[in-house]
Amino acid sequence: MTKAQQIGSMTAKGGFLNEKDICHKFQSYQEDCDAQQWLKIMGYDYAKITQLIATHIPVRIKRSKALALGIHEEKYEESIRYKKADIQIKIAIMIESVISIENISLKKSNTSAGFNQIDKRAVSTYQQLWHFDDTLAYWLKCFTGEILPSAIAKEHAIHARDPKGKRVFLDELPLHAQQEIIHFFQTHQYLIISDIIKGRGGLCAEWILVTRQDPLNTHAIDWVLKDINTTINFYSQGEVTLSPRGSLKIGRITMQRKGGTPDPTSLQFKMNPLELFNA
Image (cartoon, rainbow, N blue to C red; front, side, top):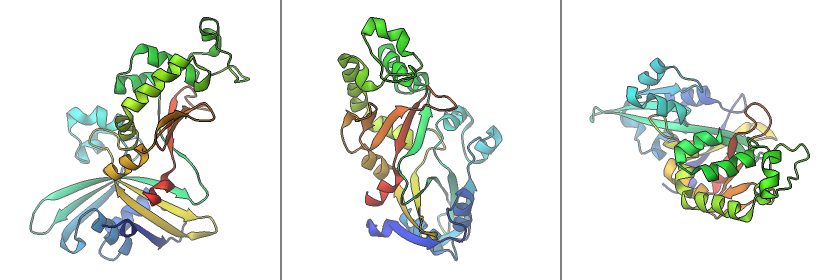
């Protein structure tokens, strides 16, 4: 499958396609050319499919629903906490008598859009996930504003440029703290990007489908479908460095303070899904 074969276009009456629209297209695979192409990219011959069930996975999901999607009871908490899939399709193949399950993450954007948030959590949650030490957690909490500049200014001679005094930027931290942060994210770059794009557990994403709308023609949509490993490798490309605005660049991913409401002191990770068209 070449790069060109992983990209296509379609016409949509209602503009952006949401998760339910994509599910409907998969359910109509026998007549829908886009769904046939998606299945081909996934390695299926649609002519040999005897049954296909496409299910939208909601943001909040009950235990009973999760178990119906094939999640093992002991994996429920992990699967819900680190869910990245928006759609699940179950495919029954003629002759083999097996059912395959594919989890897909859907990203919607337009040609003029930039970065999208892909993950946000409290520093303490990421510490549990990635097992960094309390010192690194302290500096990241300074960055997010969970620890206010007024609490650290005297000991570390930090002069925050935030006029509201609610946070410090990474380039305002002591040099050894900056180096510690960069070293950790450099050392664990692939794992971190995998967790924030693919997730963990039974509802992790195995594919990512990006649909792109042209603002000048809201009926025209093009798409790209990539397997998750290709996606992770693509967004992992590049160094770990401080950004000009005092946040952190991790390959093609940006880590910054969430800000705003709710949970303003969370860490936030952002990506530009349109870059996947060039992967």
